[in-house]
Image 1 (spheres, rainbow, N blue to C red):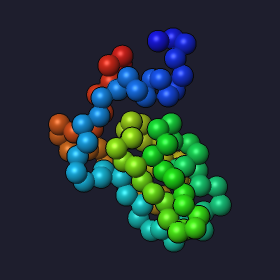
Image 2 (cartoon, helix red, strand yellow):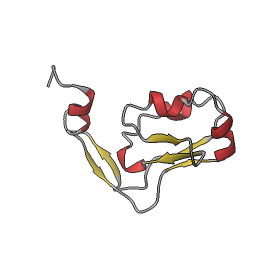
Image 3 (spheres, helix red, strand yellow):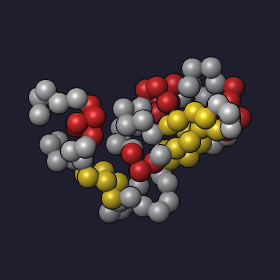
Length: 95
């Protein structure tokens, strides 16, 4: 898998989805004021999507690879991030 793209590698993981998200935006108004939308651009799994018309940051937690990059990248500390409860979340096949 050495020549695989990020997208190819994302398809090699298994994710057992919980009904409740382990990710949340604390305050959508903070996202609306954010000029960089860093969470949306830095996430390798494209979990965050800014919808300008609705002024809402959508969270597709089902795609999350649990790397934690979003919580570090958000300069406003506006992402509530925790590991999924036991038995749920990501399982990597290739380490």
